[in-house]
Length: 103
Image (cartoon, rainbow, N blue to C red; front, side):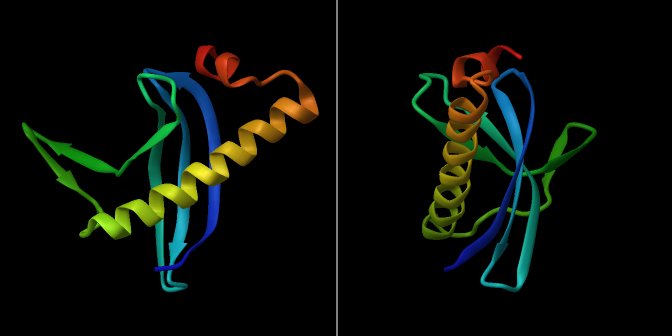
């Protein structure tokens, strides 16, 4: 499975949410509005897929059907997040990972 065109849009951190992500799978399927959250132990990021609440039910817009697909998507997004947040730390010195959590 090929995950390309990964885009990250940082947001002001709220309850661990630090960004939204999108990507293209196998050059044929666009996935968007995935949440990027800091892991509770601070060891990296985790991905959540968009849902819609209708009454007491939550409906999934989409989600991976296999562990391998979920892992490929998560690895591509986490790699892009690490690159983006490290670059902003190095180039600007104002968005450290700790600071990004508190913004």
